[in-house]
Image 1: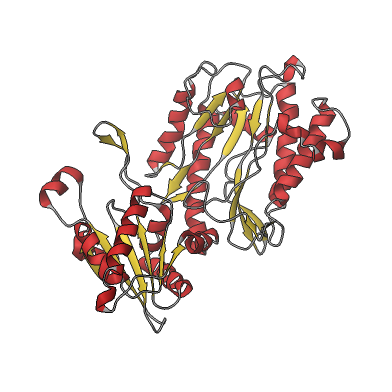
Image 2: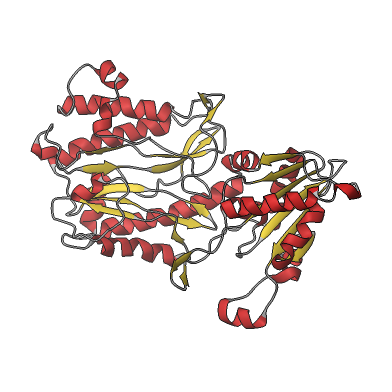
Length: 440
């Protein structure tokens, strides 16, 4: 499944309507990122640029203009020209003709002509929308364009009187996913679930963390996908490091392994975490902590309902986690006081989720007018409570130390209640142990 040019047309039309009459929006794609010396990372278009254009190439910029009537808009695309010699080295380019024929631009220009052509488009517009503050060199370039437009006042022209943050509009558009976007995220989630299932089946004591990571990448690659973020494969105490990505240690018999890894499909991300025993069997302490995290996650998922505030899953999760820590003796005191003082942060120091979409930590505000916003249909959020008992935490019994657990799923708020996109990978203890036993 792929989005069509009709989808991108509808987004541009929606943006144009929100911009108002006699306005212009300018949005550039990502710069090429170099890994080292003359080796660069594989290019991936800027999410908001791609959201509006579907154009996958580097060195590109889109311009959306509205006019006095406010009823129509024009879409221009600046991109690389066709170049036979460079295409032999680096691959096919759409070129000027392709930008119009394949990507639905009304007008297309060579990117080398941007500084020259953009001035005329800025003249006499009332509002300029662009992504203020994303790239300092681009900010400086826009400033120069505005100065050149201002210089034409003697000819009866002027530059936009107001410069507005484009992200305020596009981020909110991206926050509410269409049915097509949700289905793309469902595909990404199913592929990622297959990868996690394979990891549970393939793990063995003394295996290296990076070898287990390769099993995930194998599944991603089978579907033409890449990781949507750096994979975390943390065995034992490494699972207590929230953003552990070295993945270079052996997995030990008796330890848990925490895997936070997923792929993106057609520029839409998934995000899954599972924690399971390297040898296929949870110890008593591992099982006790895992059951607390799992109970908190099920309850938090159930709280992702239209009308509930964004923070509700976190409140639900922290209450259950704190109760569990009290029952196990890792915390002592009175429940309400422990919640008020956030005593759980000794073992659970992050939030319970984040928006998910084209970016793993997707765009969209979490508060409006200083208050947590309510869930609306089409919002997608991760739900990922955890417990991390540091290996050097002498406030707890030694049997608990070095255990790190996180369980994460991707959830859509719908009129029918929460829809879990990542349900294809098991997470109940009996199901995990059964799956791993079958693979041995």
